[in-house]
Image (cartoon, rainbow, N blue to C red; front, top):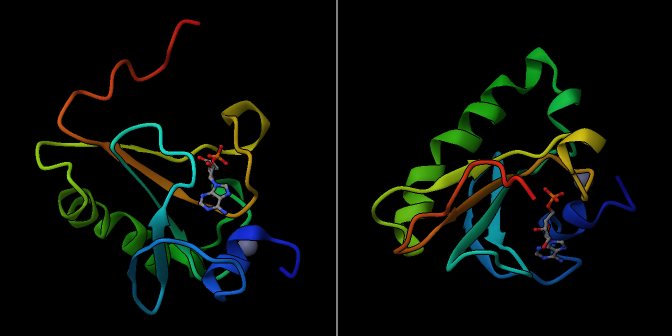
Length: 116
Ligand code: AMP
Ligand code: ZN
């Protein structure tokens, strides 16, 4: 997708702080980190959201999750982490390219969903 910011990051057209890359996924540090560890993992292929995946995407989705633990540990979250995929309007998704948030650090991330 030519106007997708995360596609441009994957293509190197927009700078990012790379954390990991392989044939299927690209990981980079969130530009506005919410915790000491805040890494985003995205499929290299444009997939708009978790509501837009097909059976062909299963290997990519598997990889997305499979790299999460190592990314968390390598980036300072050695005792667990929070993984989040926001989807669509109700899920609060702001960037329409599927991405997995990996949040952590030394302290607990906090409640899964805030009441406020
Ligand atoms: P979401 O609300 O789940 O769509 O999350 C989008 C995330 O992308 C937010 O945490 C943003 O801070 C992050 N983000 C947006 N633009 C960039 C960028 N150019 N580089 C790194 N992270 C970004
Ligand atoms: Zn995209």
